Amino acid sequence: MAEILDTVAPTLMSGDPKSLIVQSPFDDFVRKYGTTQRRGIFGYFVHNLGRRIVGGEFPQGSTLPNEPELVVQYGISRTVIREAMKCLAGKGLVEIKTRIGTRVRDRSFWHHMDTDVMVWHYESGPSVELMRSIKDLRRVLEPEATARAASRGTEAEIARVATAYDAMVNSVGDHNANADADLSFHTAIFAATHNMIYEQLIDLIAVAIYANRTVSAPAEVVEGQKRSLPYHKDVLDAIMAREPEAAARASHRLLDSWRVNRYDF
Image (cartoon, rainbow, N blue to C red):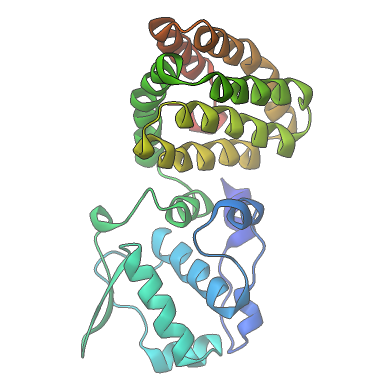
């Protein structure tokens, strides 16, 4: 995990807004799927402060520096600071109280499935508890989604699953293209459930797929791509055969096959 922390560790501020701009292996993911873009002073400030809160630099229950302090520390305007605090409050991380200040809320109030919050967890070093929770939830969601796709998906929707699988086969060795194809595979399955809530839950899987590619050694990533293909093919075959129970079993086998290096619990 040290490589992530070293890459995105917040720097000591000296009143220079440029110091907010730090490089992260998740920048590309946020550009594609994040709810708050990493551009402009506002975007970088939200991500910088959000990452520091999730990472524990500002503990739960603590009060953040006030506006004048943040103006000096970051060299940005009060307007940007106020809008950023509203954004973080919308994600459940902080609460703003007149004459008291902005306080970090207990993490039970955090919107953990917000894409940005999930990314901040990964960037600051995800806890064992978080990763177990994600893996446990995926075991509940994905087999049932796959079964529903087998019984409810249209021919066109199932064809999109097949197209995504072919893209996975053809992109082995290409970290970015393969991860995008993997995400397209699961996105197509969730869409084929004809359940609008399921469709939105794909963000959880999106972050997990991207995180594995980002924090793993290149050789590990390619080995994992190759290892997963037969299990993805079993899922596809069961969906195409319109066999919900077989699809759910294949999905369980796919989940069981994953050795997500340091994140396998």
